[in-house]
Length: 174
Image (cartoon, rainbow, N blue to C red; front, side, top):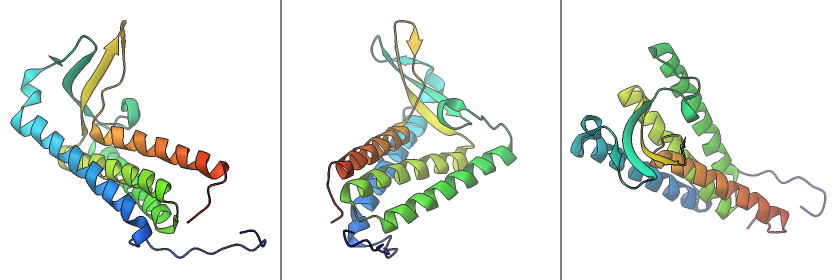
């Protein structure tokens, strides 16, 4: 606002402006859950062990009972439900942000994060842990094992950072 007044935004989580975010959320959620179902039920990755795809990439089943990188791993039901509750709270806050945002690029990033987060919550509820599959390694170093939902979350954060950069360069709300 150039006149010095503050604009009050209307909360509209299902507005036309938020549709890009919801589309990204639905796509990332569906892609992650479909891939996990196929890997667990059809391909049966659990009985295959490590499947070497290239010299630097393997597919393997790892059950992550914590958050990123396996931090704060929870082996009991109380911890599991605490992580589910915290994740649900974060998802609700992100939906709130989406409902207030009028920036199409930010909405895309928020949707990717929301979809990925919901997908991982579904895993925690159904399986008790998040199923991760992709393992990159080179020169004796291994990156953490991750899934499509994690990729969506990281991509969503990157899109939000890009949106902040755009805003700093003078792009304004539409």
